[in-house]
Length: 265
Image (tube, rainbow, N blue to C red):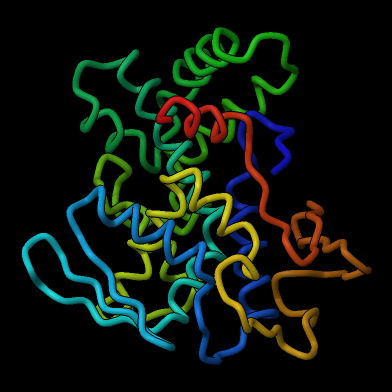
């Protein structure tokens, strides 16, 4: 998975994920690949849970001995927003680090920055210092600091609802991009969390054919909708005049996100 930026433009990552899902995914039943089954089973075992794979569905037994019944489609659906959620988690990690350098009361600082620019200059200056120390010799410190401030102050930029100090801050934007009812599809967000937190699952989720044996895309994959103004082969231009590449496996990872995974190995 290639990396070119310290952090990617979160708004573009979000919209490209939504575009792929809307124009590529079609509802169908899936059988899961054996390697994926083994990897996800190991991930759950580390959390004290078990999983039984059936032909087209699965049953998870939690460590409280409760059951979660889920169709295998959920594992595929979750892969569409793994790039978005990966960046969300990395953005949060850096934003929290910067906030903790500026204030002893991190929660209040985070809440006070939402919808305000009063701390913008101090925040971005601190962000640049941290980025220069962690990623020497780069030329995108200022742009990355601007992204981080945008993440902290403008929740509409990433379709956020709950403040980022909450552990479930990612659930609403992830499920919204997948157009799923929160009450009945909450475990999809848990699968996305797994993909975005475990590097082995993250690599697997970058290619849907590594998850499902019988995945088929829509017959017409690329259709112009309100998200885009122009489409040429493998290139999509958003209305914000930002281009992203479209191909069968477009998921990649930022340098900061890769470092986050490596620090957890």
